[in-house]
Length: 513
Image (cartoon, rainbow, N blue to C red):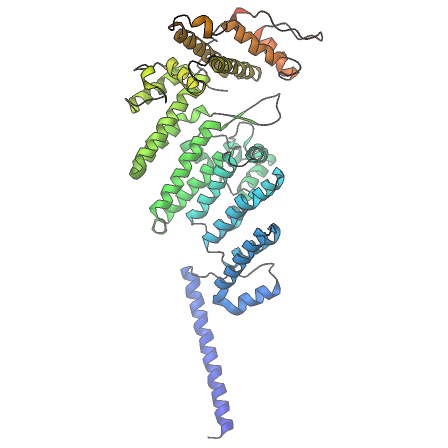
């Protein structure tokens, strides 16, 4: 056979082999698609050289992403944040089905890059960027990956909900501003979001689903199981994403580790405790900034969550029990402050039954009664911070409680007014009784009359130069039956109505406002 014939034969053989390999590749591609093994999605908006290199190298995409990851870290170290963020986009394009890439890049934006900026608005944009990276893109490619739900919930719980960042109040305010049109001033509004009856309600429902990726039906289910929450605050959204991660885990139980489930549940419990401590927006007409107070209606759900957590995590049961006891101590004290005395007494009884023989207050156990009453316990909580025999600190604490009571009265929090006033009187009486047992000490380290402390605290609040705003002072004067403020030089109050002087405020059991 001539050389020319051999060349022709080899060319024909090569063409046949290439054709056969192409057909086999098509079959492999179909099988990979059916089994969900396809990982190579086309790049978008990447430089031509990167797109060409990606297509040319195929299976070497991991090497490219590793190089870009190193380069992005170098750029961030040089404070070139925007260039690093662009590389992060390319990395996630190269590895869209690798959850750790999305989790790391979102965490990096929300925690590392954001704090490089002094302006709170700039920080908030980077926190949003990390949130959107997970919510809008990471979960699109990895809808069944619990890690991404956990990381998204963590941004709401830790970055926005806790006070680890100096800008945390700004984050909360911005989120409240975005959520208020959707969830209304009461923080729920589920019926209008699930079955909108007006064009405005329809737009809000569309925004909630399409922009924020929140299903109002599932949100209502979460609220019924763990709430009631104010959905304008970040803790409710943290619990939403943790709970959605648990739902996805139920659909694919074979792909989920037990530790992942514990992490998601723990995120719910921790966020629930945060919502108990500061999960209620307080309407204050005299302060444009948002004020937060405890959500006392969450106490039964939070208590049930702790009990369930102790059953599910036997290994950490003792640590969880300690946290449970601390939660119950706070619950009793917060209910007492809010003048919800019947509930405070019930939960105090439950606390004593659940942890019998254990000290409820740190300090000198010999000076504490064997069985404390509710009043004694709440007074002891205050004394834990001020010291029982420090005349100056007790005086400051009593005046502080009185100031808080009058401030609550001015903004319409009548229950908290009564609770703080009652607690101030109890602390005063307890100190005077304790000092009276020490011979010759009442005159030396005793407290001024309660009426004088009361009047002094009120005079400070009503001072036009350094006290509360004029509108708040006017409301407070009306509520207390005091004469209206005049333009004459301010004069201190020398006497108060009997109801104001009393150490006991009117007792109610209304739910907290």
